[in-house]
Amino acid sequence: MTAAIIDGKAFAAKVRAQVAAHVAKLTADSGIVPGLAVVLVGEDPASQVYVRSKGKQTVEAGMASFEHKLPAETPEVELLALVRRLNADPAVHGILVQLPLPAHINADLVINAIDPAKDVDGFHISNVGLLGTGQKAMVPCTPLGCLMLLRDRLGKLAGLDAVVIGRSNIVGKPMAQLLLADSCTVTIAHSRTRDLPGLCRRADIVIAAVGRPEMVTGDWIKPGATVIDVGINRIERDGKEKLVGDVDFASAVQVAGAITPVPGGVGPMTIACLLANTLTACCRANGLPEPAGLTA
Ligand code: NDP
Image 1 (cartoon, protein in one colour):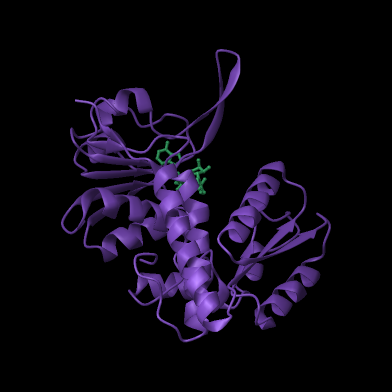
Image 2 (cartoon, rainbow, N blue to C red):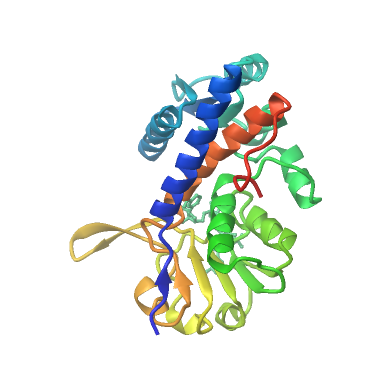
């Protein structure tokens, strides 16, 4: 059996089109233009690529994009002052501070200075608490994207056994909360987990968010299971640089029922969900109904 390939690129394009259609109607009906502010501190090359891509896709969706690029040596107090200005700016509905931040800046302090209603990354402690208690939250973009792909593939997730490999605040933990909220039976695995292959073999859903190239092999997968590969790892193979996930695609695709590729799986969903979150934040700020299907 060969797994169905979950086309995250195509699905993300659909999400972006849905967002753009909703934004066009919102702006035509009320004159409101959703705005996303992205703050980049320093010159990390990967972050620069992400920020450029975010800005471009924000504008393509009909939203306003505000980019703030600050030098690496920007004092923490200055970044906090910018966050406060963005919190107070009515044209800004979403604020994203690109991580990682330089070592002299306390990232938790900065994230928790963002108005939770504008926290489109869903990392503010209030949103973490809201998600964990089943209340309306801003949901982190990558896990939200994974959830959308899973619901699209499997319909209702209730009762399914899910293993999330990785317990980061950005992916693993919120992913587990979302699956729990959809009534999966969830196991969170990490570097100290015993018999990870055995755990995975019992799972209907495996989410790999580890950062270790091709760690999850086909013999870890239950036949027919759905595999979501969040990992993005750059490796060298045959003298060329290659992007691979945390799942060994070649062996897993022989066993799984459905699987996301890398690239072209979860990756494109992250920015699509960032746009969806910005639209959701804008609707909430203006007391308007939220777009259907774009939130958890
Ligand atoms: P972190 O490094 O923050 O977390 C990695 C997790 O994997 C940790 O919980 C760690 O366990 C666990 N882990 C490490 N080694 C093992 C092992 N041998 N067995 C089991 N668990 C292990 O990473 P992130 O969550 O930020 O990212 C994970 C991956 O997802 C990365 O490849 C990253 O690039 C990618 N990513 C992709 C995104 C996208 O848009 N597609 C967005 C965000 C991330 P412990 O806690 O015990 O150390």
